[in-house]
Amino acid sequence: MLGCPMVSAVDLDGTLLNDEGSMSSCSASSIRNFNRGGGEVVLATGQPLMAVKSLVDGPLSGCGIRWVICSGGASVMERMGQAGWRERFRNGIAADVTEDVLRRLSSQLPGLEIACDCADAWLVNTNKFFDSLEVGMPGVGRRLSKLGRESGNVSELFHMGGFPDSMRILGIHNAMEKQDLWDALQRVIDEVNGLFGSDLVLKDPGVPGKLVAFEILSRTTNKATALRQVCQVLGVAKTHVTAFGDQENDREMIEWAGVGIAVGNAKKSIKHVADKVLVRTNNQNAVATEFDHWHITPSFTLSAYSRLKQNVNEMAEQIYALEAENIAMQKVIEDHEKFVDLVTARSPRRFESPIRKRKSTPIN
Image (cartoon, rainbow, N blue to C red):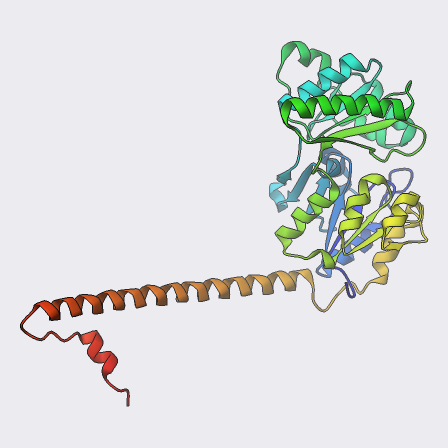
């Protein structure tokens, strides 16, 4: 990739946001300048859209954010101006699979704190989940608890039915060692996959500290899959894409992008797979500093690229139409000449085709 990228995907917690979960004005300014210069900043977060809206409508208001990858890649949302948000892609878990997983987790792992991400609401088995999450990610647990905390209870739905589709299933267990929990969870996932033919996988959600947390989601659900979907809509190759991150749930995105960038506070494993490692951390405006190093008004912007691609596609359609019309006309002429030959052969009088006569007449 040369110069300024066309698309830049940015993780939120631990990357764009500082440890208090807030964003500086200079970060917002850098994003605004990048978007106004013809680029496209895509927010890529493990948080659901209901949590991201407050950021987009608050500190990032007026910065031109159109695309948000939510719930770790389970949902891709596009902002349609005054019409609000619409979901362009969903890579979630079917309702019957969600119910079966939750039943097995509840019966086989007592003490497990579960929160099922249902896009615009949480389905929980205990409100302690958000309190525990707050310990590992200060500010995040408190922020998420305000977004649908009372939306539903797993135990109630076991009796009432009506489980919804889900984006992913999050969980915390404070009384088990990570490996023991991982082994038990994997057995549950194997049982469900064998029963439903699903493709669920177990992942580390990237919660820092000693908190034993996990997430269960579809195998194809990750930020890289979602970012690829966005880039396909925009018509941008991955060689013109950068991705910023700090945790394990950013790994696939960092590996897929043309240039994967790890902030200074990223995990060692993420720094190892990144193409570039920044010195600055999320508390030092690492993303904004990198943005400011780029030429924010590239000579060949995303908007110009999109217009050119559209013109090329329109020209190609016109050429295809003309070719199809020419092929059809040639077929009509061939059929006409065959008919003339047949009539001439069967008639005692000579029949001369005006089309054949015109073809044989030299052009002066």
